[in-house]
Length: 285
Length: 41
Image (cartoon, rainbow over the protein chains, first blue to last red):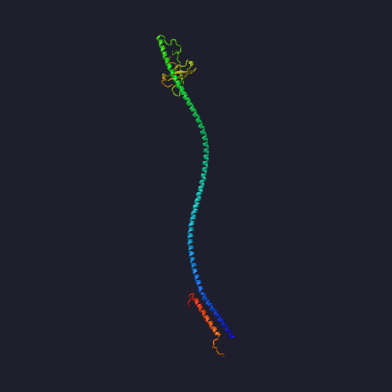
């Protein structure tokens, strides 16, 4: 029995020893591959670690850059915000100015409309005035034509007056000649005349009641306080004096019962006639 | 009283082979450990 157990133990010992040898051989056989694999894995691990470190450093650099960019972007954002705020403020002020400008524009438009309306009225008024000016011009032209006609007639009358004066001079000369002939024949001129001579005129005194001069101030009319009731006749010669001073003579041109109008003979004037001056038909008693 | 058996039998050979296998296995292990820079004490 002991032999059998011993033998079995010997066989088991042999089997285990052979298994140990096989396992040891296997370990020795595959240990090289495992080592290469481990070395390869270590290399790859180092490469991966290096890559990781590079990636980390790159990430850190990028992080720094991104932080710098972030800070720059933040400052730029703040600047842009400030600019935006300024722009909003400027926009608000511009809007206010725009509103004010629009109000001023509306006001100016209203004023322009009022001015336009007023201008239209002025234009209409100017047209009316132009028509009136045109009519006045026509009237002036007519008056000028009339003045020319009047001047022509005046020249004609002056010519007729000159011829009449010449004729009067001739008649006076003839009268003088006739008077001389009468005196040469011992006949006094006026001997057979009427009673209306200067000698038959009684002295009548009056006063200057009014004065008026024509526009050219070449002729002066005098209104006196004596008339036909005082035997004043047309073409009588009146003497104007003041106190003891002789002023002028005046010829009666219009007679009324209680007053008469005389025209002053400028050739005889020695002073200016005033209201209240004395008038008489002849000096002396 | 039994007489000692002086002749080696098959089991002695098997024991020899087993011991040889152990030795070879130890050699393999030592060589395998040597690849990892193992050094003895």
